[in-house]
Length: 270
Image (cartoon, rainbow, N blue to C red; front, side):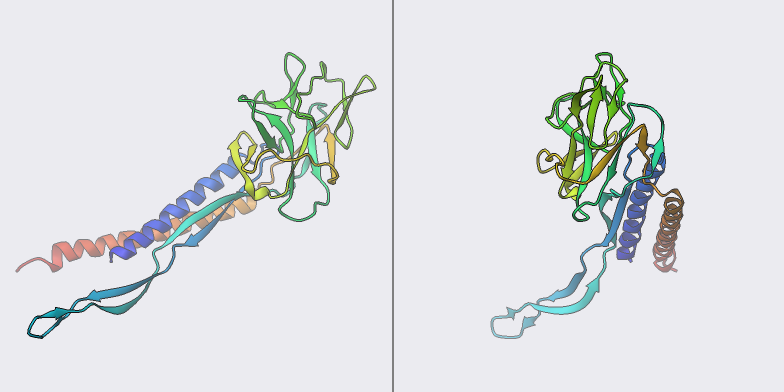
C-alpha cells in the first residue's frame, strides 16, 4: 500500500513542476525573443524485487543457506527528467525603433544549431540572447534593457552616440556613411548545451561560442522577434497537467482512507 502512496506522490510532484514551467511560459508570452521551455517526464527505473530467505539445514551442526525467491517488478513513479528550451524561430513584430533588432535564422546545417546576439553581463562575462530589444545608454553604448553591453564580432562594446544609424542585413552598423562595427552573432553547434540564466540570457557550458561566419542569417532593423510560446497549446497542456495532478491526489486520498480503516476499524478489538 505504501508503494502506491509513493507512486501517487511522485506523479503529483512531477505535474506540479510541469505546471510551474507552463506558468512561466505564459508569463513570458510577450517577452521578445523568449524561448519556451519544454519538459519530458520519465518513469523511475523499474525495480526487480526478490525475497531473501535463509533456511536452516537440519544437520549435526545447523547450517544456513541463502535463497532468493523472485517477487516481480515494481514501478516507483515518474519524475521530470529535464527542461529544454524550444529554439524555434518566433514571429517578427515591426516596431519602427532603430535600436530594435531581430535575428532571423537562415538555413542552418542541422537542428542542434542556433544563432544568438552576443552581450556582456554585469560581471563582464559573455552571454547570448535572442532578445533584440536594445537601447542606448548615457554614454552611447548599445545595451540591453538590463544594461548589458551588446558586443561586436570582435567582442568589443558598440558605441554609437546617437540612434541615427543603420544596420545592414549582415549585421554591419553604418553611421554617417561609415562602418562603425558589425554585430556579434554567435553560432551554437549544440544548442542543448546552453543553459538559461534568466532575463533572456543563455550561458554556454562549452566555453565561448564562435562567431557565425559563413552561416545564413539576416538582421532586421526596426523589428523584434516575438516569443515562440504557443498560448493555446500551453493552456491545453496546463489543463491536462491540472487534471493529472487531481487524479493522483484522489488516489492519494483513497490510500489514506484505506489506511485509516486498517488502523481504526480492522485492528479494533471487540
